[in-house]
Amino acid sequence: MIYRGRFAPSPTGPLHFGSLVTAVASYLEARAAGGQWLVRVEDLDTPRVVPGSADQILSTLEDFGFEWAGPVLYQSTRNAAYESAIARLLSSGQAFPCSCSRSEIEAAQSHVRLPGEDAHYPGWCRNGVREPNRALAIRFRVEEEAVEFEDRIQGQVSIDLTTEGGDFVIRRRDGLIAYQLAVVVDDHDQGISHVVRGVDLLNSTPRQLVLQRALGFEHLEYAHVPLVIDRNKMKLSKSAGAGALDLQRPTHDLWRALRFLRQSPPLELRLSGLSTLWEWAIQNWQVHSLRGLREACEEML
Image (tube, rainbow, N blue to C red; front, top):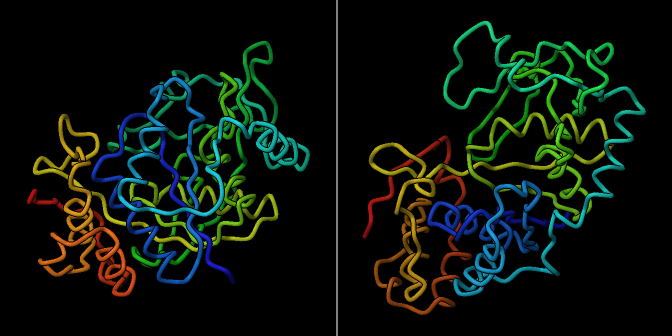
């Protein structure tokens, strides 16, 4: 199998240190395997897109010496492919229209949810739309089974989707395509074989695995890297004023990213050129150094 990895930022602002860490890990996994690394801009959630930030992110990646294969793919140009996949799932009965609003689903919850926990869909429209005159979402019908996979960093993962949110949205009531479907279709169409991304997306993987199976796509290999957090245990890229990159010293921030990824880069490489540091990093990349690590605080140098 030819290794094809990717980095898929959302253009909601400039690239931050947490995103740089993920980009570096995915790039090194691909390059160390002698494979290809692609870039995709995930700009489907139009209300959150910041104008100009996609170009800014790509420029920053170039400043840091990343080299990607082929043209950049923009999700905003891919609606026909997503609608085709949805039509297949509706035709097979593996998806269904749903009129339920978020507020109704929230009001039906039987327990107080933990931070980040999805609201559980009660299944009201599974056997027919309750309110056909409303705008309709499309949901994927999940089965009563645990979805299991081996993550190269986080180890064995098992999640029962019937208890973790239930039937999930693949097209929103406002017509926007949901992340879970778009990423599956894009990964397939781009020939992606391996996904390296932040551990905050670990719980999305079972949803993507069942979509891959339903659409007849190959299952991918996954590795979820630890999140960079600040001293208050907040995700660094979301912390006010934190995580900004020094574009005047890209080697310095790349060295910091390698240190965070437990690669133990030699101190003298902080003052080397980018090509020298990348060469060392590719030759010495060890993903097992991150085994089981979910988050860590990056001490500013």
